[in-house]
Image 1 (cartoon, chains in turn purple, red):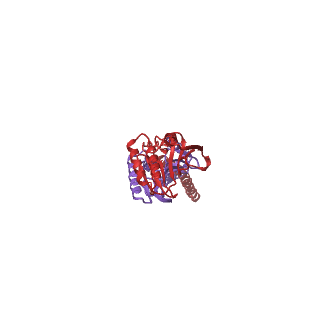
Image 2 (cartoon, rainbow over the protein chains, first blue to last red):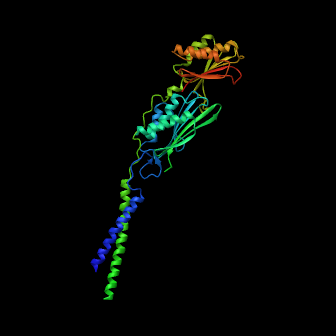
Image 3 (cartoon, rainbow over the protein chains, first blue to last red):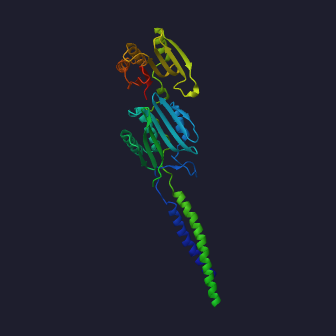
Length: 186
Length: 198
């Protein structure tokens, strides 16, 4: 009788282990393939950041280039004013990582962005795709097209949201702004 | 006999129940762990992309090659203008750390203002001419400033001078070489400004 009890228990144990294990594995997402997207800002962080990069390094790179950098509240940022053109890069940060990137360019409303302005805008846009020339090329083509058409648009590129706006700023000026964050679309 | 059967059923039932509970526990923990281990790292950059050469640098915030004394001493003081340099109030967020203002001699209503961070870092040059539109004085001053602000590139200087002469009497702007010229009548007299172009 004890043998029967043990056998029945063992059978139930094996069946329950398999069913619960497989269910849990599938519920947690199972075996996915890696995708370009944001990841946790630090181990076990609930905030999402561009993988591996540090906000401090991005700020340091711009500072080295002669931008003036500052630290308002939780965000970081760098600026450079060239005559009538104002170039500004903002970095949203959590646990040292980069959770958001913005590029804000102030210029004359009746002119297209200069070569230098576009170079900075494209560099910022390409930061999440530095590991992926094909993805970087897609972002670049999208950006160039949208800037030329002066559209206010939003696009999801890989796991990122890209938003581009051109806003009139008064006195014959306008602001071109690119905002990169995590895409919340699935 | 009967009690034997009941005990068997009870025993087997208890075994099944215990097995189910233990099995579910082990299954949940191992399934969770396996899923976590199988979860891939998101793909992303391992380093920042290099900043391309075309992205402006701090040096681009100044009129290339221009020095304060080239305008104030070599050009204006030789023509008997008087110039004075003042440090600007830091917290007013003015265009630069210093301002040099030059006035023409003998009450002529002409002035030139330079904003600069140092002798070699000039952010802007502005020539104001308080005479009516079309006056030759204004044209000459605008031309001189536009020509002098482009240092060491005679071909470009020729073009900036020509543009200044053509546009001194109207609102206009252009970029020639790497400087921006702005002719502005909003203060009711001709004003010509030279700034670095981005």
